[in-house]
Image 1 (cartoon, rainbow, N blue to C red):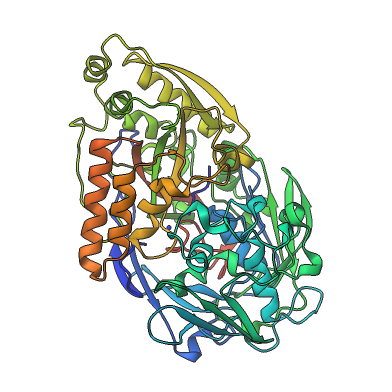
Image 2: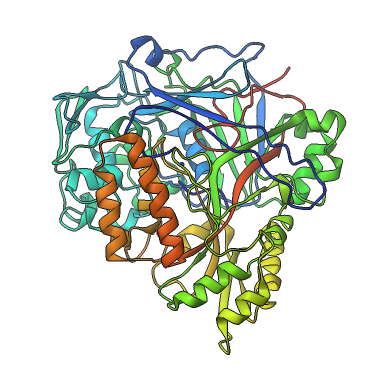
Length: 588
């Protein structure tokens, strides 16, 4: 899962993992990010999947919640959504077969329970071999216009996700149905969905009646309950499918629906009158209205939330506190912070199709001053320096330092590695003040080592769409990744399995493809021993960086965001690494 501008593959359905806290990176701020225990189980207790959602103590229904963001959303179409904040918004609009119900435990940590969302449970493994999964739909589930939701709508939703035109989303289920590798680009080599003349129900999916949908995979897919919580399992009514324009108004099956969406300006959600809370065990849906203001400057967002006046008292954001205002987050303001380390790692992706010399890639890793890059976006409030591809939340994670440099880098050593070579590279960045500041820090750091770095702004709202095109014209760019569910196979394979590379919609933003690495991905993916698999992913992590250096790990991201004083029920989601909206309410 991409991080805005997913938790370890261990093949088990219940895990607990600890996230490390942040370390000092020199901006003078607090470096004590809350340690987060990510605790996930898959529940087949019918009570857990039965609505309404557990009440939040002190919560009141009604009012308008405001959300201030520094960019628009790439996609709201459930087939195309692969960025965390898009998926958070998406859960309010389009429900899936399964979902995460998160609850804050007495010690402040968050428990994630995978439950049935529009289905009665997270999926039945019919033959106990993980090849056939059956879902039974709940009663009284409807689209926003009152039309009953049937199994055919789910089948169609999955079918359209095969379309090459909608390639940006996750492809686990599609690949499992096709019998290809979990992240292969060949998932739609034969069947390309209904837009290209394919059936409205994809091969491997059957709907024996209006309330039953069955997935039959040629190989075991034991993580299906987690994959069923991804947005591409949401129902889509074929008659209302507007193809590429579906991004503008996906038909609601959740507690809210879109009343107005002005691209790059605002998004307004209102209650879906056809939503029945008795069918929903995850969404409290307390506010009457949720208004998103888009393309608001990050510094302005935080100044407004610090001032805490008027409607901003009922506002939230997913934009981290900026360095300019960090010193003002004290006293009562500090009590309105959502703080904690996340499952996300951030990188500078190196386009291996353009930067083909491994020695240049190693020199980039050696030269980068990660401390300076972090300081430009908040220092220790933004994250802690990282040398690994996996984040420290990952089971089996092992720290290493293959380039033998500190977090400040070593420009002299990098210059020696380059010799007389002076690479001329283009660094692309999302066109926001925050990312511009970071880009300047990257440029300054690398140019000390003899690189020539040209900065190129990219539209923030379509950032990953642009960089996900194989023929993009950028050499370097920031990216972030968190595992899609508690499984380590959702980190290395989606990021670095070269067989997944397609003309567009790529998650392998390094465009890295190595046969030996691909073979090892297949071997570990078939490992039945969860503990051994976790160790093997960590070992492959180190080997990839040692031998190929396809990217520059920069930091383990920290969430440090503000709320208005009238926002209640907020917490840091372990599933998405940002403030959850499912339990949020506006104080009267």
